[in-house]
Length: 310
Image 1 (spheres, rainbow, N blue to C red):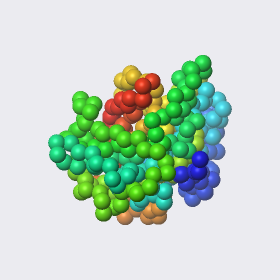
Image 2 (cartoon, rainbow, N blue to C red):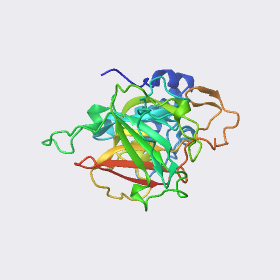
Image 3 (tube, one colour):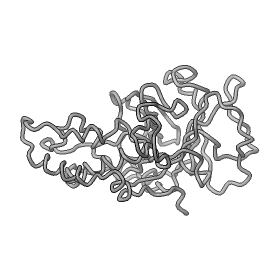
């Protein structure tokens, strides 16, 4: 199967943001840790690590800090494909994206609710992540195939205004196979209920670490959880719930994270400079207060979801 997503170039972005000193600083800090903590974490931790991964700096910084902590000491890994975002439509129409033109046949009836067209919230392409998406929950279980290669998520409008967790059917899900012909064109898309600037993703294979050893220095960080469990859009891995585990049926399939790009340089992959590093682009995806949409799939292929804030 051909590769759909462009790969995130971790060495390039590590150089771009001059993060090598952060790895050395982390290594030296970790070596000094005792219990109880007597050495505050470096200020560069907070300045480099975002609450949610959306642009290249956040992911590069977290991977740099992990390397300084000695990633092999963090416990058993759970593989994950994490997404980093760029403005605009993707080169491949089936690629993972937020908003914009959905990957679906033009002849298919458009999803609607109460007689109004729904808008594409996001689509996830699993073609580059099948080894994660098909991983069985137990070693003795055979992996079940997904219902399709690309999952489309349509929403009727604003979260907490037009849809929320109390209405499980308020989101519309479609599975599509790769290789479709006669796709929807931009001019075929009805005006969406909420305008989202389209963004598309590069992909990065990494891992989540659910249970670092009890005496690991990561627990001496103010928020070590965001180093162990990556918060943002991803396939596989461990869901980094903002609150308590909601115990959704089935297994974690993917997470869709809000976008809140910041920083003076490259807040997104193809945005070299930010006009104002403290201003949120109101036309990018925001679910409540930096929330994330968690999707689980049960043994019958039914999707279950919840949104939790940051």
